[in-house]
Length: 92
Image (cartoon, rainbow, N blue to C red; front, side, top):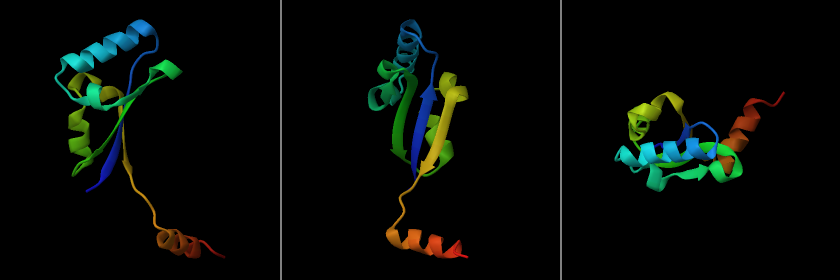
């Protein structure tokens, strides 16, 4: 099953962070309790990694009012064998 990183951005500043966290919490979504947030370090985003069947399902995890500020990235790991095969493709 694919793994996706879900990133939800919000405005900077203490009050904006509290408003965003409150809205996420009130939405009934588990996003706020399962995500990691970078606000304390100046990165006003929440990140959540999930294993779901599709990007569309990953997007549906985010409450509707935050979907316009979402970035979803499919993640994957590479084996050493895959890396060596790819390197051979690009050798001159």
